[in-house]
Length: 102
Image 1 (tube, rainbow, N blue to C red):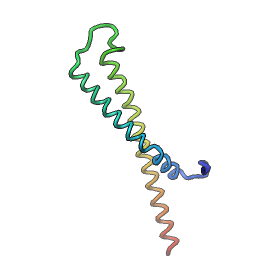
Image 2: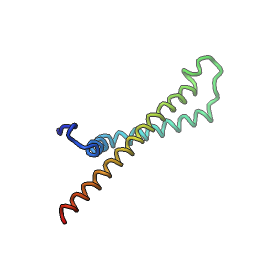
Image 3: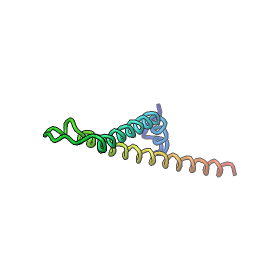
Image 4: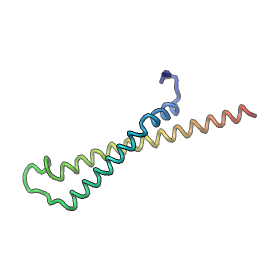
């Protein structure tokens, strides 16, 4: 295992993307299912009038949805950042290889 302190940021980002790729897609599939359940409950289920609606009603589902939305936004942003860093690293390596070949 290489020492992470000696690796460049792009290399660490590439390792992170490779390790978390299957989990990232599973997370997004789960998020889409949660979004569909939230939309179905928002448009088809009537809102109960009792005081415990936040525990058993649609407000709990909506709260879980918004919490998952924040996490999905963070995962999506970190994946974009890691892809950008990996692309920059590959471009720099290609320039170095071309300069060494000439």
